[in-house]
Image (cartoon, rainbow, N blue to C red; front, side, top):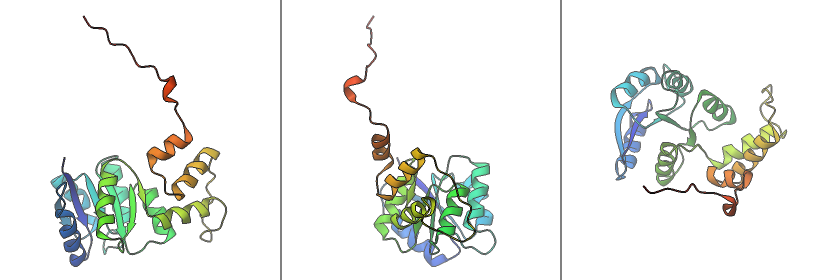
Length: 193
């Protein structure tokens, strides 16, 4: 299966570099490019991407508002990967709140960007480790931005966030939080006619 990607960034050089990195992969194809979040919905309708890789700061409509618009129009697909130079807590939180599936700084290595596209295309969420640690500290009472609304997490949510901060994958977190002993699984019997 080929992962179809739409690039949304106001810098042509960035789009060109991303296209070169992604198109070099056998399982990824860049199906379109646009320079602003204002045209992301028609671009998605035209190119039918699996993943939209977009920047936060753009001249007319930023990546956070573009993500909100995409989620209203397309609740689950395409997946949204925010790739930005502005990797501060507020942008990470705003992007996730808007419905982004992943967040990665532009300083990421090419292999990390390729892996991020594959990860979000596969239905997983992705945050870079520094963002996870920062969000974990912020919501565990360790500080954060002034005036930020405190979100009360359940014990279960706090456990999941702690495991994310330690770098566990979704599958590993599920196994850690809900261990299923394989000896107790019962498989249905199939009757042959």
